[in-house]
Length: 459
Image (cartoon, rainbow, N blue to C red; front, side, top):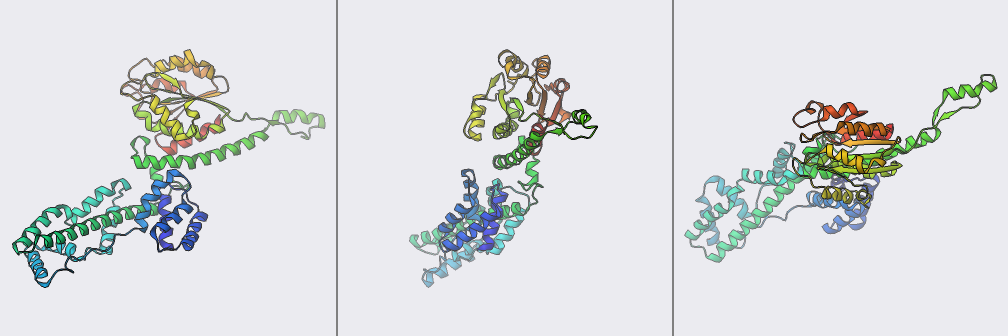
């Protein structure tokens, strides 16, 4: 049980659940106290020790039956038959082809494929690099390979053979009922073995350097994530924010001391004959002031969601922050971003500004910003624009963006498109880029978190 519990903890971590070694040891102690005879008690003990957030319940409840499940043994339909009926069943099976006979014999006699056979087949399925969302498809494919694809047709054929040999309707119904229940148990066990094989493979996969989710997922394009992968990265944002916040706190501690001001120190040393008795420090300005203008059009929504989450979680690291979002036109979202939870804040913003196809108009949005929100920017402000620069062939109004740069301390553009795509079709990025102080690529969560980290460093 301890080995299985350790493997379960690895599976949880691979699914994005943050579980420390101390909590894993607590889980083992909880199992010893609760006992392992009652499966539901085991589940409650592990959940109490390992799950700290409501967001992690789904992963726990999905993985627990894979690691601690197991279907009941198959029934033997021939046990309760009298010798004549049993002989009739065997003769009916003899009338079928070898493959069908073997399959139906397994379902009737309760001797299905062994666990070792199922585990081997599931491992081969998982080695294709399948994700948990593909479990259902792989299960169906594996059952078809085992001959379960036409199970109802096979049972109908067996029924005809049994009727021809004079078995009563009640006996035939009982036999077919056992075969169907056994078939369902085999299918459930196949699904469990495949799910378990995928979970183990992900738990054993190489981790990212910083101990987070699989590095391949950190590097995967935010615009091509499956729902499950997006959920994993949403949980990962919390861990990234903790790291970024620690770095920001360290910079602030250093900022309170400041850097040595050599010129002032040398000047002060003149009164002591050139000996630097009084060191003078150059104070650094702490906590940047940020303004975010975020494109939430259809193509940008996956990236915008993670950017908004990062900004929300790091809001305590900036002295002042105002946020704006645009598609056809620009709206301030600062109030919405003040919601109690990040998920609620992001959902409200994305709901309030529907995507709509071919509606993006950054030029018009910049004009709205100038008319209504120009006071948001002063010489202390770092202005961040998140967008792909695609403007549906509208006027890009680059002169308005240049005016905002002159008012701000710094203008940074975060773009999820590769530079090779800039200027193609309706992209105005080649016009916007020269206006900016810096343009960072943010195609995946690793690049996005690095860009935000750099912003906190440089602002």
